[in-house]
Image (cartoon, rainbow, N blue to C red):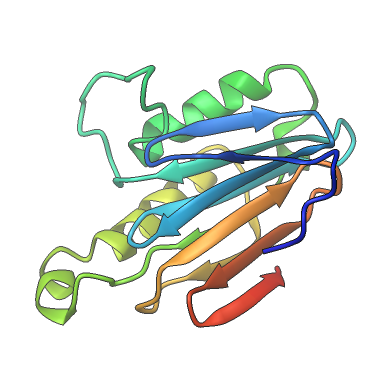
Amino acid sequence: MTALTTSQTRISVGIGQLATADDPGIILVAYGLGSCVGVTVWHPRTRWGALLHILLPDSNGAPFRTDEPARYADHAFEELLRRFGTRGEPRELVLKLAGGAMVLGRNHSQRFKIGERNAEAIYRQLDRFGLRPAATDLGGTAGRTLELHIGTGKSYVRTATAPAREF
């Protein structure tokens, strides 16, 4: 994506994970977003950021899992706001969404539409908490990699066939 300087560290955010940081030398990265949706979260005043790697649309009553706080969209946003705490007003958060692709092929994807369902569930959660995305890169058939640079608040997305671009 971007060249690292000696003072930067990439932290991989795996499937179902939620990572937060306030160190300007940290870059949070979600690799291989297929039907999963990655959400970068940035608070410009406090320079606090988070990256969620959401796997499924809804917990359907399944208990919250501390080892996979972003497994489900509904749990992910509750946990995000819990971790954000009293750092500022949630409405000040800058959110960007990427992923939600149909990567399993038309036969499987049309039947389950996991990527589409993930995106819809995330929009419901954003509405629930009064949040709006600043940018999106959702759908299609290509997987993506998403990163958030904590020092600048910039988000970048790329596919296997396209270079990284800020969005």
